[in-house]
Length: 84
Image 1 (cartoon, rainbow, N blue to C red):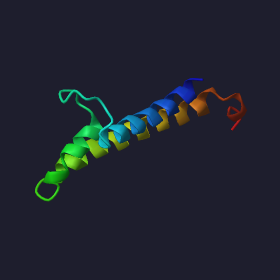
Image 2: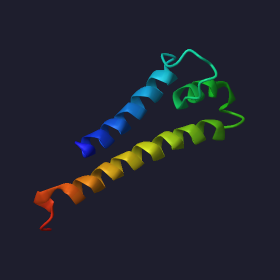
Image 3: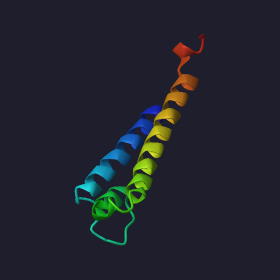
C-alpha cells in the first residue's frame, strides 16, 4: 500500500505538470506550478534556456525520487525478496 502510494505520487506530479503545461491547471497566476512555468518560458527559450531546464529538472528529480523510494520500500518490505 505504501509503495503504491509513492508510485501514485510520482504519476500525480507528471499529471499535474502536464495539465499545467496545457493550460488546464490552476487559473490563479500567483500559484507556482511547474507545468505553467514551462509554458510561460516558451518565448524566452532562445535567450535563456535555463528557465525551462530548471522546472524540467525539478519534475524529473521529484518523480525519480518518488520512484526510487517506492522501489526501496518494496525491496525492504516484500517478504518474498528477503531471502535474497
